[in-house]
Structure formats: C-alpha cells, structure tokens
Image 1 (cartoon, one colour):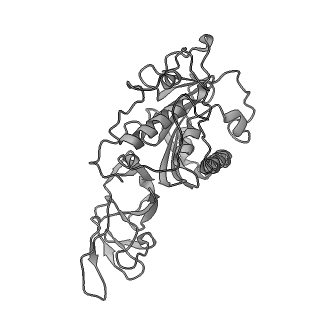
Image 2: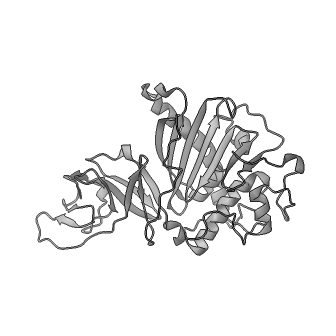
Image 3: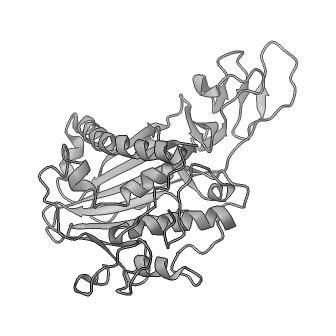
Length: 366
C-alpha cells in the first residue's frame, strides 16, 4: 500500500550519499603505532598516523597480495604490511619493498580531516565540502563522558529512523531508560519554525536535531526540560555497507564533571549503551528482514513520525539528485502531505497519515 508522502526505505546505497564528510573514528582511539581498519560503503579502509601525527586513510589492501594492512603496524609514519613488509605512506605509495626490486603500484586514498575529536573521511567523487557544523561541537558547560564505537548488522537509515523516533520508548526500552514511563495520550515533535530537522519532543524533556548526512543530536533534561541537569548525545550512523552500520556515540553531561575520572565509568556507559542498542536492534533488524521481502516500512506514517519522514525524504532526494540538493526538505516542490507532516501544520494530511488536532498544535521549537 502506498502512502501519500511518497517516501520509502531501501537497502541500496546510492552514490549521492558518498559526497559528504563521515566521522569514522574518535581521535583518541588512533595512536602512532597501531592502524585502525573500518568499512564504509562496502569498502575496507585503514587509518594511521604519519610521522607528524597527522591522520591518513588508505585502502586496507596491500597492492602485493591483498593482505589487510590493518593487521600490520606503523613504522616511522608508514604502515607496514604484515605479510611481506611492504610499507605505504599517506599518499598510498609503496615506499619500501624488502627483498625485491621496487615497482610503483600506489593504492587508493581518501581525503582526511581531524576536527572536534573525530577523524573524518570523504568517500565521494565531488570536491570535499564543509564539515557538519553541529555534530563535532560540544555545547558550552558540558563535559565529555564517553565515546563509543559499535559495528551493527542493520541498515544505517533504519537505525537513524529509530533514533529519530521517541514514541517507541515506553514500549521498546522497558528494561533500560524508559522503564516505568507512562504511555502519553499524544506524542508530537514540535519542530522549529525555521527547519523541520530540529525541535522538541512533547511531552518528553528532549530536544533533537537531525544533521545531514548521518547525525542524531539530542539533549535530555534528566528532571524536566529546565532542570539544570542535562545529558547531551551525538549518534553518527555510518553506512558500512548494505545492511550494516558503524555507530559512533558521544555522551556529555552539564553536571557531575568529575564522573569522567572515576575508574570504571567508561565501562558502565558502554554497558548501558549496549543494552539500549540491543533493545532497538532486534526490532530494526526485523524491519530489515521485512524490507528484504518487499515490505514498505513507511506504509502508514502518523504525526509523531515526521522527523523520520523528513530524514527519509532528504535521503531519497539525495540519492536521486546528489548531495547538492537543498539541505532542508522545507523547500518548494514538496508534496503537500509531506509539508503538513513536517511543519506540524493543522491542515489535514491525506491518505494514511494522521494529522494533529488543533488543540495539539505544536509551539515553535526552541
């Protein structure tokens, strides 16, 4: 059954999604001696630091016998293959070939930038653009508490849509943060007047933003919106490949700054994050299996789905037209039904979409 919003999910990774900066690792995890491998868009890459300490990214595949370079080590700023000792510099040039005559056979590289405590790569063919503005920035008065990396067996868009939805919390997260939450009579995302991608979840004390191409940024009032104790989260869902996600998670607090120095705190955050993700994962992986069978995971969107719908509409357009498509789905040419659900208009939404009643019209986001 088709819905009036003309949005649908897919497991395909179109080329338009490549032309963005993606944070693939936290800076603190990449030392001088050991390389770190990762997967992005179904291709394996490896990070290492050159002799100046600058991050580099080359194909995780030796030009000799295709051995993963991530299994090797870094010697004087060059990554050494563990099989026959071939060494590569940051330009992908093999600069040392022991026991044989040297030949030129460079391997692929990616543009790299290090900012905001993250290492970013550009996997596209377009000229690299500007970094996202919000995701690398820690808000004032917040102290970083944890930085976690997880590789998940689920499509990155489905994971993003899950993170952009809070209405599921009292049903899904009954063993973690939403244990004991009442089911509210109505849930809505009150977006800001200037953009459909940022706003406040009513009735929850949570402010949330989607930032292209892959970020969910949220600030949670632990005892209400203006309680003075807040938790700030950044989730980055990277497309490892079809049906696979690399998740970078950053957590900060505006209180208890001393907590980061307590032994074992990082392990506690890791444990809690894993439990929450596992509660989500079994459901999102179930969606993925249905999607493979031809189901439409956006059959019947309702009012509280509008942030996820805005993301999916943006992604569908980028996949069709490339990353130069306008960065906000609040542009001319949108379908009337999408316009209504994204802006929170009281105008009726046709088809299977449920509109907000006038008494629940959302205020301007903050």
